[in-house]
Length: 301
Ligand SMILES: [Zn+2]
Image (cartoon, rainbow, N blue to C red; front, side, top):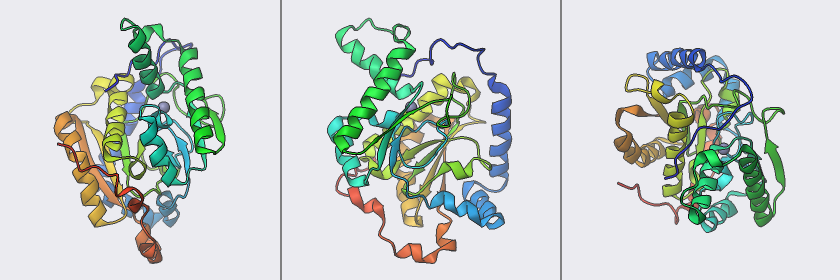
């Protein structure tokens, strides 16, 4: 498991995380007071039915799980897949109907990948020896190469100086991860009601890679984000998003080994997509969950 060193030297004052953390605590306490994410989302969708569109996305661009990416739509994999074995990655994405590939600035997954690569030739390489420029170049190079292999466009390098990314560039501000089994989650539409969150697209990975991606998000929060603010009383949330009650149970089973590993610092909650209540005909659509059924690993213990 790669570790996630701090994002390196920054050219501005470090972000003060305290007000961001306190606001997110208030938001998540409000969710808890309503009985959890399912009750919260159901109530919000009743108030504003347009929020159901957050669970009806058809986006298929590949991008990182990073919570600061503005357009929270598409296939979300750490570093656009840089931590995966290339064969696994191409197999998974081949089935997904990818439309394009992006990279982004200050990517923790790219930095971790670069560190492990450099350590192969020089075991004494440390995170401090990797420059921001090296991370940026590696991110672009990987995503361009992946787009080429998938025969789709490279959509560019998302950054804070454009519209691609929002929030502090020096630190991560997510304390939750959506584990999306619906292939249809667009977190952009949830940004006014919930704190920013990492997103792991479950169905476009073999299980072991999906679990690893959740682990990556948790490690980013611990080592390049809220860190010691995450405690038993204020844990990191992993929220499974399912199309059905049966899938909810399956996704929660898949997360169980991670919860056992991380004890009280990580908590699981779940949502069954509220879209069925508004568009019952969706129930008849085939689940894309079937696309990789032959590749899905059993939950690991
Ligand atoms: Zn990233």
